[in-house]
Image 1 (tube, one colour):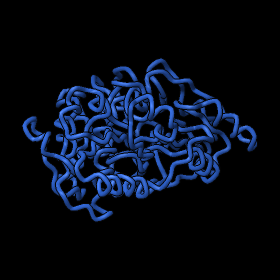
Image 2: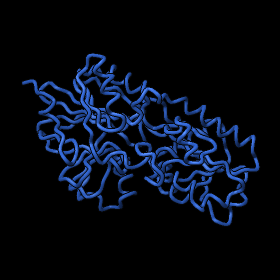
Image 3: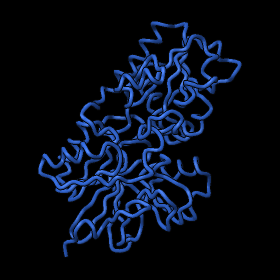
Image 4: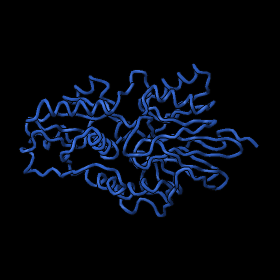
Length: 347
């Protein structure tokens, strides 16, 4: 029997629910069983009875939420189908951050893919996105407007290095979310030949060490000590975005403030945040890659979970696809999903 999509996934107050499991995917409230796409806190919340995720995501959740984030956990190996109840589940790389995964659900000849957060651009800190043909594609739309077309991240990092060379007496403070973005910026700096120590705000240390333990080459990093700030002229210092506007940032020598985020495409937003050097480095798919991915999946139906939903739904319909916005609440509370000041450190 061929099932319709609504038989495999339903929208509930807790989020996407598979009654054939039964389980939720990235639930926003504690549930009995959760499948989690990645470690950002708007997708990976504590308090569930059981959590299934990739090994790296489980490590990240334990580091951020401590050991009590779930009563039991189960590692999902990438590309290995698992039978859960009446549905076959497969985790596949999403290219968003370390351990991030799409989740494919198959039952009755129908395949539904939940993208989680994803990007198509190369990233030395995580596995690349893998396209999964499907009947129904459930996609994010954080940057789901045509204005968002991300430049090459390596070129943005070269802008940072050019500024360091131009202003060798000034510290360069780079706002970067603690999970994923900070480590990606470090890895890109190393790929561009920067071999000096990179200084870290204390809030970035724990997850940076986890990435290093997972084999991601980040080079030498040092924690910023209060007594050292005035001597860091010419240094690159990574910190949570919120720290750029704190007293913490004002003790550096004539700092250049930079912010690595897809939202820096909007220059007014950079000016509003007092960012001197906007770096358009995003861990989410831009408009072109959202549209390309939808086309390449071959899906005849698209659900848009969070972000700029309406524009992407309209585009899908112009392509002859069935599409609906889910207007899901509880996502976008950290990182690039929510650019508001002080609203988290990842994305």
